[in-house]
Length: 423
Image 1 (cartoon, rainbow, N blue to C red):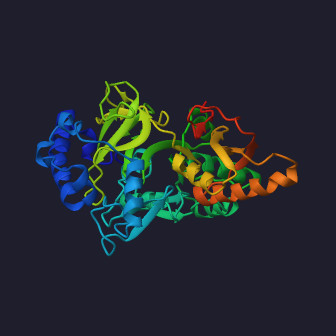
Image 2 (cartoon, rainbow, N blue to C red):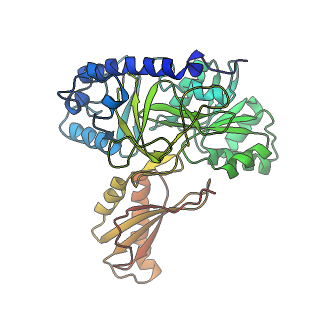
Image 3 (cartoon, helix red, strand yellow):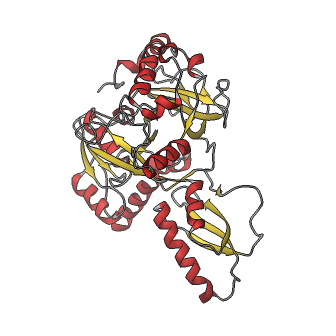
């Protein structure tokens, strides 16, 4: 059993930086040539001159909402479904296409470990020859495929559990005896609790790689008490793996295939080490070459190197959103989706989506000011039911509806409020 996934993890800082900065101008030139979107975004930029972090910091940041807007505009005009960001076209080089809420479409290329997830799995303790129970979704969103392709690259077999069907998942685990679990931490907790209720032991499930939502120390310790060592990774459908946790549990180590900056929210200006800002990532993936892509997530760089011997920089992990987009049960919910819901109901004057609860128990409440008089329960139930159905249609998540009188919501510009406890 090797401690490191490959030699890249223990390179000197100088060697790593030299390799990344040598690859950077090639990637920018490639994006300008093969991605119509970046041909426009980086117009008049000399790609070969972007060979250092200072030069990179002068390029514009492209944020998720801009990617969405370009995709929507292209689709409405009958053009490219990916808004011109993908360097691939439909066909043999793009075996799958996925959708994230919004709706943003992402291509999957054919390269082995396309999203580079094997590195995070190795750090979480998975090794070749093992069976992994994968409970990320396999439809619409790419999470299931992200993890499966990484597991195959690592030399592991995969049980594609997907989401839901908790009892069946417990029985499959009990009978197949996987070495560990991959999925959201909250669903793992649900599975363990269901197994106890069913009086079925899962002794082989001793490790887990979790993602898609916050993984607080309280839940990590809860799993540890039940014999499961859980580690988290930070990834996105656009960028693949960004950073991963190690046994040191001191922040998340950056992946070797990305260039990460921390910038002041709302700008592209890098902040000082240790200062909290928005995570901006440049990926070296030639198929989907995102340059200075703003994740909308807040984090900060940690000083020094990981105690495990991995030499890449580390981030503190997810520290909130730079915008009002939130993750609920592993799914992004955007302010634009709130607006989409409101547009369908002329009687709605104003709305706010409040996400509350504790880890593994996210609660979505759609607070609505309505021009219609709030009368008896039967009279309002119809509107509540209609809005609830649209919430699920737009966000793919369930939410309750709270009808309010005009003027009840604060005048602070918020359309999404994250009121969850992360203790």
